[in-house]
Length: 377
Image (cartoon, rainbow, N blue to C red; front, top):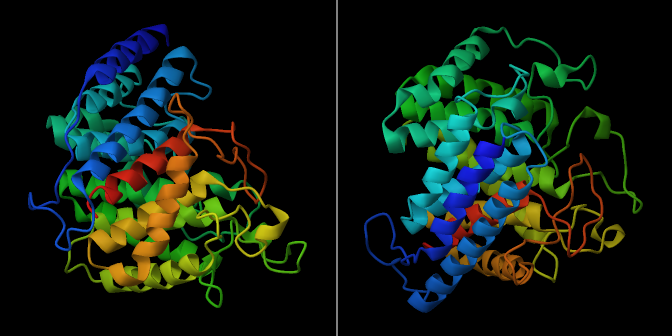
């Protein structure tokens, strides 16, 4: 991995010296209501670059997890979004070097969603560089996934997570990668498979009364200290992030698009109502008092999803902008002077603690995704 670290260091040096411009919306015009000032956009973009450069520098020193691993792959999704919104291609270059180092392979657990989360970045880069070799291995894997029967129960036993999307986090890792591959290749089969399997997981894990997802079947009967059901913030953040990334890669006339929009709006309403006074969502959505610390990975994904919904006219700006802005301000306040994002709950599957110094690449990814949408508002 030393060669990869050298390439990272080179990219970090380039990025540190680069100066970005505040973007406009997709039509090259300022957002219609003119709510955000150019100076604020420039400040936000500078902070996003600081966070991204800290992450790249951290990776150059020591990558805690394999380069293909979901922890890093979720970080890559944010790095790519920053490259797109800033117009700074050096971020794309950093990701391309990662892909080259992996020879564009996904992880070794072939049908485990975590191990092909990186397929999102491969699919996006293949569109930037017009290079089908970047998705050749992932496309072959996707063909295998589409050919599987997917008839097994999603009950959390017998290593079902290696074969099916049996935990809510998987809705950020798997369907989004297939949907982006569909966009990159023009092959509708991948989106159709993502659609079918999304609803299989949703039918099993979504609590329709609460409009929230259980992390997996182990939590159906568990309760928090206050007697409420256990709904993990980052787990539902993964779902919200997955929802908007599915919608972003779904044609306007796609048959199930209204169904996705309906789910997104229900979750957005529920999530906005659960925001805490500090602007974040604590790790237990229904028992925030037992986990009083702020938390930035779940908050980052919620901020991203709400901002995306406003930007694309799926959510009312009047209704959702206050919660979105509060969460973005809280996220910015969690960035340390060197660019490290703190208050990120560590790897887990349930509510837990976080502190000012705890961080991880998926937190960086969520922050950058959030900022990439905030820039348009």
